[in-house]
Image (tube, rainbow, N blue to C red):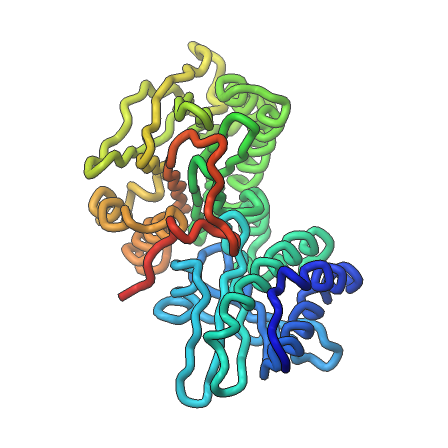
Length: 412
């Protein structure tokens, strides 16, 4: 094949090839170029679904060169899970199978994995180049999923109900985010009767905003309440409102349009100082892990959003401060009630302290799902934030889309 050059040297060619293709063919075009480049037996892209436990393979082997679903793979104890946890490429050579798996990640948000099947005897010398290609692929998927459903359907755990579809589409487009100052991730495990849980975040020039909300009701009613609630919060936030005004507008929206109510936490964290502001609207209080100590933060609790105006006072904006090394965890009551009460949340947080927020949030929701025998009576949602400190000029180590220095270790 000749000497392999870095994918960076051919970056413009890869992106130009993807841009020239139809949106649904863009990844297939990249796969074809990589197959030629590495003389690969096959190249596959696997989308990781919203649960973080299953990958859906899109295969480039259809007659027209497009992609189709071949299989859904549970990733526990596989090379795929290893790659996602460590955010490092992996070379596996067993029997007649020889492959390199690389993470397809952007700012710590796992989109999927790239799997390259190679001829016998090859692999280690091309791992870095394949990892660079996977990073390019992340941008190709992000750019093209605006125009096609192909890269969206694989995110759903299965054919969603109308309520579940509404709930999924209220989630942020990236469940994880890394910056020099922080890393965060949210995870949602919907119940059989959708309860409307949601979480959200955005990074402004000088602040991180986070929210986690839990409307009353189930199924479509809960989904509609969540839609109004999340839209009101986003609308206020996008207009530059602080968390107090966001809370007021969410409260007014639920009262005026649905006569419904919801609990929630709204937070703003200054990216330079770590100083935070919090509104607690009838919601479970956040947990703070500092060094080896885990404690519930002490805040006054205001009534939920949407209750009648009688005796209503403005939502209180309360202050807290994060220190470098702190971990902040926010959950909905599905993490605390019914079968979830059998889960030792504090012990689980301590056991997962060494993991990236992505794996910690997944571990929290998975523990409750298992405690319920796989049949949740209430949605289970968790957000995990690691605060690294206000480093405005520090650059994170992210050559392949994630800060590998702060990634989780592989399973032993």
